[in-house]
Length: 168
Image 1 (cartoon, rainbow, N blue to C red):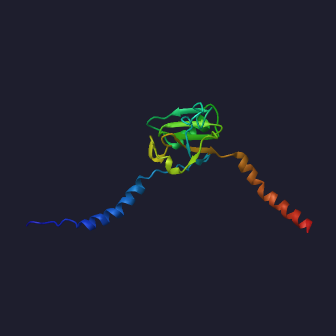
Image 2: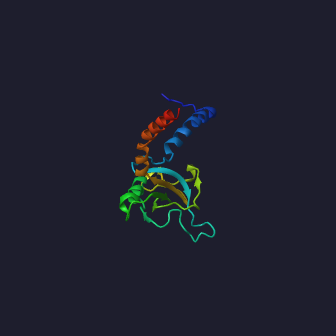
Image 3: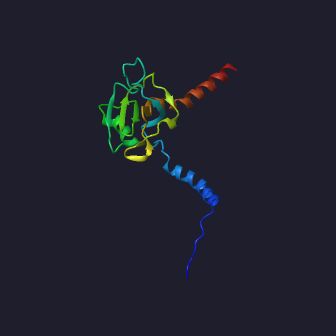
């Protein structure tokens, strides 16, 4: 018994493809890492070494750096800037899929870009964003001081209410 197959009409093929393409793109989309207890994602910033008249100063200058070729993940860089370097750094930046930069400040010359400008995957986790070409995925150390001052908010609110009542 011979079986013949009928090819799929072109419009049905295109219709099926139009539904499948976004699903495949979503599966391949890079994710910004937000799982750290110590650091919070700040944004995508440009590297400043190629800007005119800057003496090639980096966006995250004066700190530590390490190349994690073939193994880089956001977690590795944040860990390095937190405890693996010579001290704990306020800023951690991931660049070119494998470079980790740590510093106590970010250059005022470095501008914040749309997150989509940081478009390179980490060498060690192809689903995570690790900066871009002359772009850094920048994280900032969660401030213990900010948490402590937040705990004073209820006390300040109560004092304000009492002060208003006394004025009335």
